[in-house]
Length: 154
Image (cartoon, rainbow, N blue to C red; front, side, top):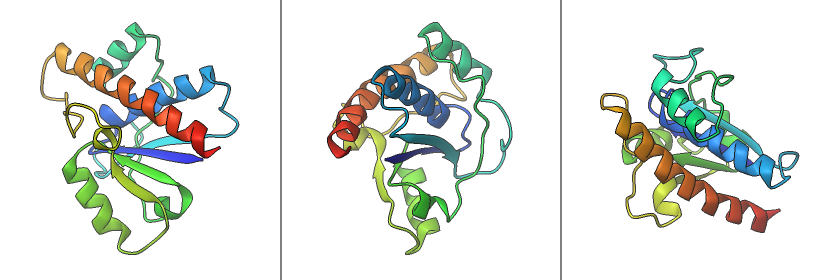
């Protein structure tokens, strides 16, 4: 199973989701069966590490994002991945436009798919530290549900 998380710049939300899901998959002993990555719809941060505030908040909960680097989503991702999960409605719309009939990846809104209390992972970039903690709370919940789905598909 191949899963791709997507946000705008690939420095806050999607690398957080990638790091958390990698951790959960590894703990479940499934890392040989699941490929995980993240990307952004924009190209502003390509090659950069996740935002320092995202890294710090994640590390406080035991998730190390330091090795991750931003990249931009590409048309080939729609053929490479089975499931592409967008962090918000704008990213989902951009992904649908980019796909334009290419590939077989299933596209969905990450939180909506797992019926959390909100549809979108809010972008914490312009806010305070509590925004990064809120993102972690939401993503941890959704990743638990994603893990159940992945186990059912394997």
